[in-house]
Image (tube, rainbow, N blue to C red):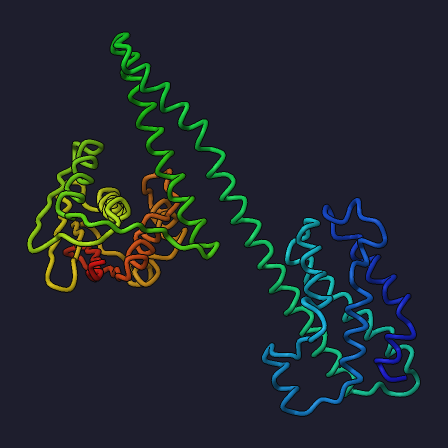
Length: 375
């Protein structure tokens, strides 16, 4: 019997094996009934049988091997994609999802080969069956990963939103206590709460911005006519107040008047300077150089200290990378490792670019921002 006919004829025994294996994938499967355990398995097998009965050219086979198999025109999702979506919502992990297909492949081939005896199985059916299962696995894994990513981003968004109100209450209460002038101990405690609240607020802002970029919304900017010399100087004054033991220098030259989002560029500069303060030489100043010409404004943040390894330098603007690497080397805790990534996204939102260079003498981050046309 050809494999397609065997699958159609022996569907129930195959589904029984699928169900029995799926039931072992705990804890997600612990309380699932038979229908849920078999979710879309029958439709997946029907699709495989249909594929086996369809004539296939060498070119079509090659396209399928590259993950470019035919897409049904009468459905928005394949059975494998829907199965992956429901498995993700049921709490399965991606290894369990792949294991279902591995068990299905083994079960079908074993039952069919036993049924073929004493005749030899048709090898072309084996090849075509493996291609069809691989196609289903690819569809399932891609859909599963997209669902998990979307759920994660929605969770981050809700977390960032819901934490703002209690944090604001803490900051307002701390400011009230500080203003009471109820003694040094109360004032010092209130000041610590205000600093901690500001740090938590910065982390939440980073989390919110990261979440926007992962959802495809990007960093939002609202450009107005500002003088970057004043805007960036105000940001550095705040950073000097937070880090009174560090020397932060500013050098400006050229025309710095133009259309930019001043608040976002303060955030960009703050992230770059904080990075230099944390990981640069503690006894050397952080130098900020801002220059403007007819077409661009350039912001450079420089610090002395150990050189950044070349492998790290190539991915230093990747999210969740830099903070983890530095924490592993004894860096300051409490960072999400998003500062440089968000700085990069702010530069992109202004149609600019950011780059990093590092050697034993100096580490430098350079931002180039084109001037926007006047409205």
